[in-house]
Length: 260
Image (cartoon, rainbow, N blue to C red; front, side):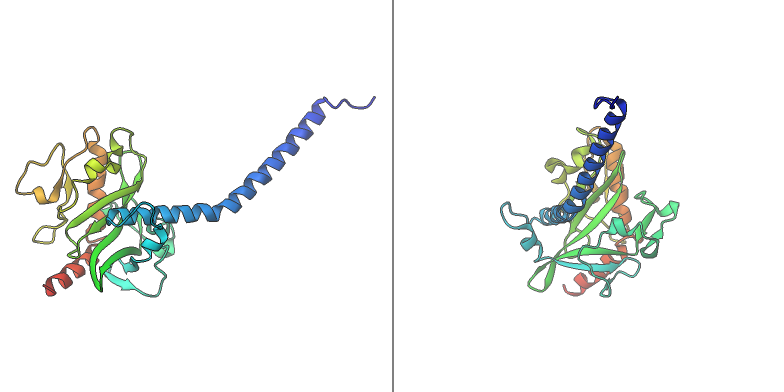
């Protein structure tokens, strides 16, 4: 007798066929959509850079506005610009995974908890005519539950904070996610990274800032998110310290002082 169309064999054949067709469609969609996803991610990060610099305007093309910002690549150990590598699109976190473009961080120096860092890193320079008016640095490091990625905007002296903004994290909703809330971010402008001796002093305190002597270096903590705040302190101290952008910021500070 002919095999029934409802037999187990036919059912398996149809199921496998449908699965293969679906797999091909999903794979094709992923390949076709990847350029669009990459473009959207690039525009999103550019928007965050504009926001932390106070230059974002709703309705204005992000790519066009971002084009007015200079992107430069810095050799972190030397604090000097690198012209031999394209700075546009350089992802400091992604490059840290490439052994040929990164170094391992000794555990005793790894405040940010990232294990490796890229040899080079991009900086974003906002200019007023030819003079630098803002420097924006990519920063990232471990929080309580996740790696937090953001941008730190500084005055031309390389010391005074203009703003801080995170664009990716997985911290606790309602607690650690205060790192992205405007109310908490409003505490950052005007804070100082370094003291008169050049030591990194910036920190998030528990509760509110009450120490008038050290208030310039302190930011109010996030209620219920002490460990997330500690992570922000550590990642900022690492990236602005001697093993991060420290040598570059020292050069900027010296140049700013000589121009006064």
